[in-house]
Length: 346
View 1 (cartoon, rainbow, N blue to C red):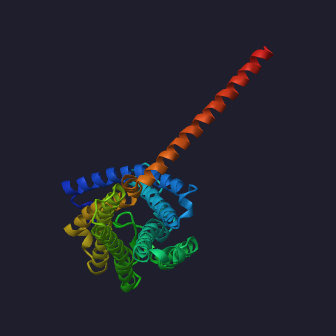
View 2 (cartoon, rainbow, N blue to C red; view 1 turned 30 degrees about the horizontal axis):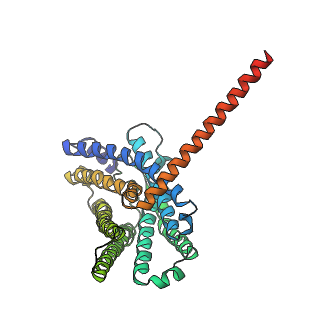
View 3 (cartoon, rainbow, N blue to C red; view 1 turned 90 degrees about the horizontal axis):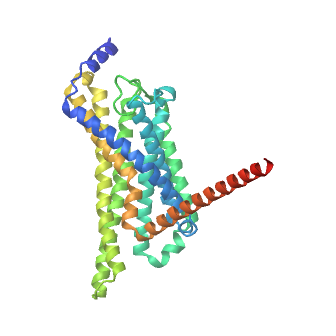
C-alpha cells in the first residue's frame, strides 16, 4: 500500500518553473563540465608524467587527483546520458547501486583527501624548508596515497549491502534499505560531511592562509621593490586562497543536503508528497552543478596561475602536433611508394 502511494505522489509532483530551470542548468553544466573536464585531466596526467615533473613528489598527488576526478566525471557523464535517455542502460540497475555509489562518491573523497595532503606538504615546506626534502619523499607520498585509498575503500564497502536504486523514489544517486538501522545511515552522512569534505577543505583553506601570510612577511622583510616572481607568487597565493574557499562552499552544501534528505526519508513517510521534496530536487541540481565545476576546473585553474604549467602544456601540444605531422608524412610516403610500385608494374 505504501509503494502505491509513493507512485501516486511521484506522479502528481508539481514541477514548477524553478525546478525546470534547475534541471536545464544541471544538464547543460553537467555536459560542459564533462566535455572540458575529461580532456583537462588527461592533459594534466600527461604533463605530470614528463621527465621533469615526475621526479617531484607533489606530481604523484596531482596524478592521483586527476585520475580519480576523471573517474567521477565519466560517471557523471554516464548519469547525464541516462537522464537524457541517450543511454538506456543504468548501471545502478545492472550493478549494485552501492557499488555505483562507491565508484561515483569514492573518487571525490579521495580527491579531497589528496588535495588536503598536498596542502599539508606545502605548509610543511613553508614552515620547515630545510627538512622538507628529507621527510617528504616520493616513497612517503606513495605510501600515503595508497594508505588513504585503502582507508576510503574500507569505509565505502558497507554501502554495497544497504543501498539500492528505485527510479520512482531515488533522488540522491541511491536509496537505502529501510530495514537497515537508521544510525548506520546517519553516521555515514555525518562522516562524509565532516571527515571527508569539511575537514580536507578547511585544511586547504588554512594552508592557503599560511602561504599568503608567508608571502606578505617576505615582502616586509625585503622592504625593497618586489621582483616579478615575488609579485606573481603573491597573486597566486591570493588566488589559491579564494579557490580553496570555493572548493569548501561548492562541496559542503551537497553533503549537508544529503543529511537533510536522509533525515526526512527516515522520519517523514509522506515526504514524497511534500513541497520540501521538490525543494530538495532543486537544491540538489544546483549543488551538483557546483560540485561538477569544482572537479572539472582544476586543470584550467592551474593553467591560469602557473607559468611553468603553461609552458609544459605548450610543449605537450607541440609534441603531439609534431608527432601527428610525422605520422602524416610517413603515411603519405608509404602511399606514394605504393602508387609508384603500381605504376612500374603496369
